[in-house]
Length: 298
Image (cartoon, rainbow, N blue to C red):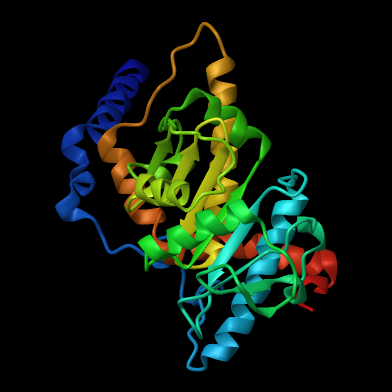
């Protein structure tokens, strides 16, 4: 066979492999089960599996350690902006209450002992006896009421998030990573100043719907999850996706290629589930333990 014939055969095979007929797995009825098993290969169990607890008090301690760890990661990535920014976590012992950061504590200094336990009225009932962010309480209390499946929420005034938020539009499916937000993030366009009223928190919760994240127009980003690790990873990912979107939009003379709906939906299903998103945060958590010699665990 000539070199030309060989080349043509390879091209034909490539075209066949990439055809729609070869992508039956993209049909929803053919999706596999979501979970961390999709990203792990080999005979050994993946190390980053979410632990299960019989004792809710032990779960609370573990949860607070990971909450403080998320703050340290956010600090290392430069998400601080004065006293703005907050993370909340539903208390496993008393799910009607939640934990939140004290007002004015730098993310990079956060420890377990700094975290504040508040009830649904905003009264401090445990942990650190300190003031909390008023806007943060209004946002998080309404989110936790509206979404029983949401156990954690993250919001900061990160640079790329608040820059991209000025456009008031959803992220485009430009790459594999952003597909984790496919049809699961929204834009809240009714910016009414700092959130100090209960009604504004309720409107935010309504805008979130059943999604994982909101782009708050002229404000920043907010992500939620069944664990603080999931919500924290989604926030770092969404911030990076905003950065990539801004970079892509700044390039002139080239047409962006947008990932198709079928491919984006499949990717979101296979890699955007709570179990996998929890595992995605663990390398950053382990790094923070190493960098701080576990200081945030105290």
